View 1: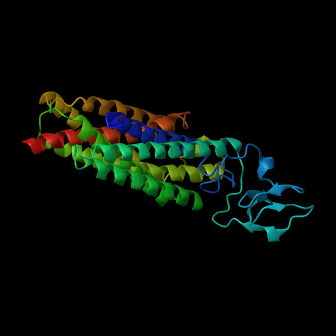
View 2: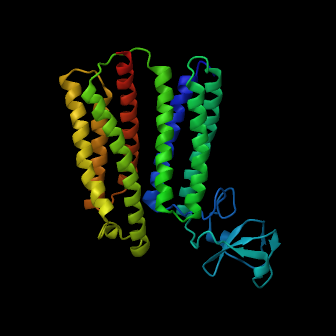
View 3: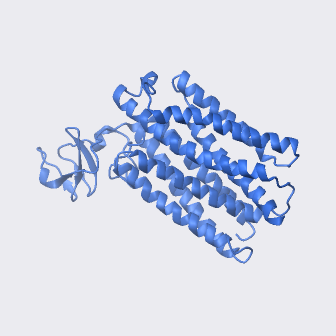
Length: 341
């Protein structure tokens, strides 16, 4: 495992972006409450596949902790119970964390796959910690970075539960997203430590300042994006998922700021591209930044003017997360040159 540690770090990073992709698909399809509880789903480790499984029925055995829907209300079984002809409220307790009492097989399994992706990434992080321990003598930061990243993954799991329990509260979703980006930054730092041996770049003070600004701007833009997404979710609740043309009707100030802030982000990154070309600084990742900016911008335009074509929301969010990662890694490269000089 010691020799394969760089591969483990790369797989860990890929698993994080896979979580972002799965999460964006959940938001895109409105499946965030597909499972009303956490970590189980309607009290099952493997989610139900039909509404009959979670609808109260007579002469049926329910295990402790199972959740059912009766009269559009969620109930949790207090112990293993075999129902009679009439519903006995003494055997059940209302699920009071929220009142979202709906079942949609597609939404339920979409949310479940999202959770499963996170669990699989958790196992990858365990390998990462073991590998970091074996490679701790190579660099004093390897093990601390891996441990902090693993701890924050546990925090993310708790935040995931809070997101469900609070019925997708916007503030918690934003924190959930930002913590995910911090974990990406930690893994990228770890990858940088074990990968970057030679310095083939040139340091430029103004380029480095623009780079720091671009990282901050991306964080702000992604945080704003989660707030805009929450507004869209509220519109979906009002008008139905099929009426996408109303998703951005009478948007809040946050939407307009989010949209206009893109101009500042483009200008800052174009400035970096210009300096890299003119001064021949040698940073190849700048080209990837422009590609990701294009994807993020074009998908944003399509969502607003073409009523959210399928896949655009997922690409939009993933492009933003990738953009942050590329900018942060580029800053690590620039910072290393600065420290050498």
